[in-house]
Length: 183
Image (cartoon, rainbow, N blue to C red; front, top):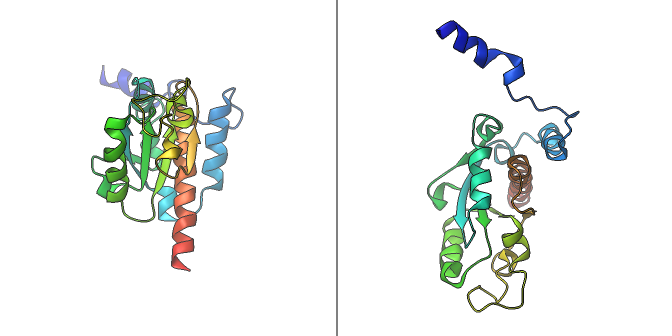
């Protein structure tokens, strides 16, 4: 039984391989970003704090899949942390509700420099589709109206590979900010 399980685990047909020849454009983008990734620790070890600012949890499901054995974002250096003090990247999902406005700003301010913000999903990137809404921060709920957004990952919801590409782009932005800070 153990031998059969090991064959299943190590058989190449069942493992996730990233290929630049993949049919999925998000997978090809991740491969390109991994090839271009610099030697900076910020580009290679990305610690993410996620804040649900008013999402219907569709993006959170995809985040869970991003950390699943199939995609396994940790092998690329993406780690989720429980405290903003340990985070380099703030991942915001959903349109920013008024009740989450102050909490989002406090979470961002608790992070050490350099830091980056990723807006994930159409709610975070585009805000509320209708007119101004009394329940949303800044009327529309766009994350960019509350914080400076370094990387936007649109989609309803974005796929796990699109989210992973956004995290890798945020790592590259952090590496660039770190180099500029040292100069």
